[in-house]
Image (tube, rainbow, N blue to C red; front, top):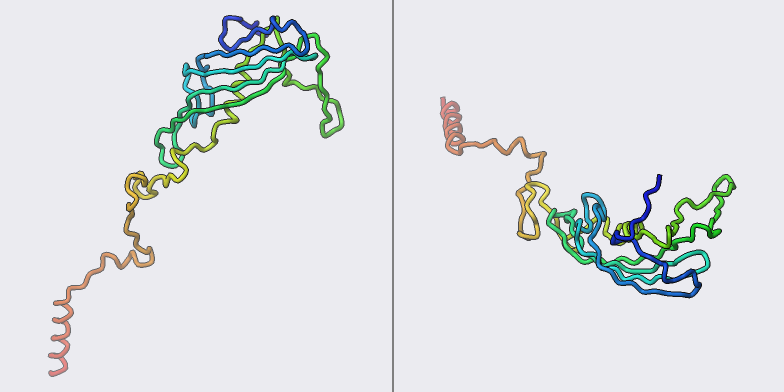
Length: 206
């Protein structure tokens, strides 16, 4: 059972003023709190409740209402190289058609078997209202970097000790060739070598 849209929801918009007149247009500016989980899980996204600035253009066409807009919001995440916090501003663009429920807007496409398949992703108006949240989510996800970095040339972390290399560009570790590792702890006392040499000379004299 579908939940009816609530006009009090900040991401629900009313198109009643357009009156189904093709060519009618309305611009809407609205600031809304970001919904939960707006972004890429555990990677980067818009914090819940953060301010999202929306600029929309609603255009009435024969099939429904064409919504074109932009969303501006802060995003936070974690650098995939050094794990430092990442903060930036995001601008996402989107365009979506919200069809009239009684409009014949069904679009058919051919699948691999050659059968007609109805577009199940079509969005519809409900009592002249539409919910922008699914469109906003898709737009934000597409605009976000899949692998955010704190800066383009971030050197990451030391693979040996985990130190942040950007804080110490000269950071390094002495590396011993594993082929010589077995000889590392072997030491010889020069006096013992000299003593051994003297004993050998004495034996030869005898």
